[in-house]
Amino acid sequence: MIIQVTSLTLSPEAPFLDDPSVKQLFVAYKFLDCEPADLETPMSLPKPAPYRSISFNFKKVFHVDAEKNQVKRNYLIYMLSNDPKLVFTVVSDPPDEDEEGDCIDVAYASVDFLQILNEGKDFIDKDVELYDINSDSEIGTLTVTVEALEALLDLYNDE
Image (cartoon, rainbow, N blue to C red):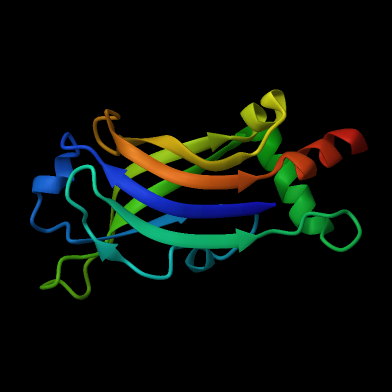
């Protein structure tokens, strides 16, 4: 399976565009039993102007074959039977003056693995709706690639 975060584009409605404490953004997601730090874009990028994209091009490959990666495969089966969505979170670094501060989740987007399975095709450079973390209003797009169809079909053929 391949998961890639390509770029982020915000619309003028994004509430944090006017927040001076939100300066740098990165994207994170949780998947399988991976360490959270391994699933964050390696760099934070400056908050873009509306309709301007910032490019992350952060790609990870996950091996979920039965022969060598049964533990990851079991995590995937569990995830698919409980919550088959892969959720991406847009995160703001702490403000400059607050070195010990916490990162703040500002937006999210998701890809449904069952949709990939039902449609019979991977998500390749697909714009996924981005939603504000507080209001759930649409505020832009996250361009992602999720190549999972072959692995998902393999799982369902095992059962």
